[in-house]
Length: 139
Image (cartoon, rainbow, N blue to C red):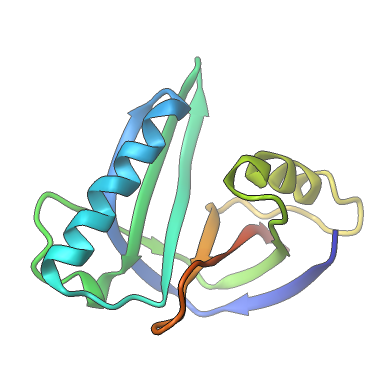
């Protein structure tokens, strides 16, 4: 898997969160995408942020840049702190995300930093489809 290192300035994501089984995540994305369409927002990126895991539950936020989510109701805002991340493109669709995260987390060449890990979905305006990347905070 090819990786790169990115230095990110702090940014804020606004969206919808859940705390439950992983099988609930698609419903969260359906909700977010429905609101994006209803409000006419035009994000080129969206984010799936892992807030925590344990006891079979997954605490997760699906969102977009907070500035593009004006007028969205019942949302949660989350700030991703500035710092370095190791990034990899996900090959093989959404089902390959856990393996991509696992590979980055086990990379012996980096020291992990306590922060949020996230998926970044890149969908430029005017193009169908999207690319998926996983981002893990490092020192």
